[in-house]
Length: 118
Image (tube, rainbow, N blue to C red; front, side, top):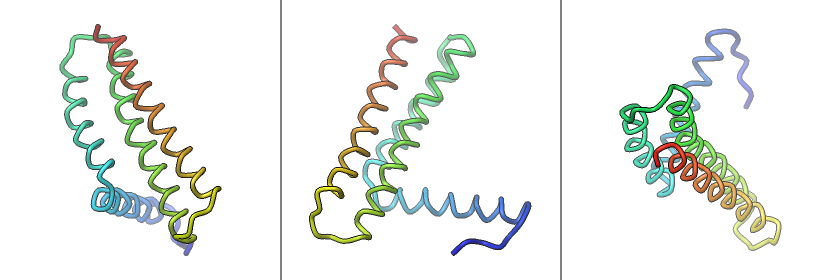
């Protein structure tokens, strides 16, 4: 499973794998699609508003963080689902914790946007 590639080839293969992961997430996860669409709306707004460079960076990073955490949550869910479809308390707990991380990120991002823009 681990690639034997070195140097630039390893970096290129990692990039291909990353794009495959993003594409797979787009196809299978409604939340990823919704958050990418949200990101496509928020990024131009962050670039358009008249704020300092530091504030602009916070707007951009907080919007991107939503997608990052959602991708990690999706990864957790996929691994849990691979283990088995029967209910297990720890599987449910892992999925709930990942979901909570997404919720906290959404709230934090909204707070950043509100603090900067209002």
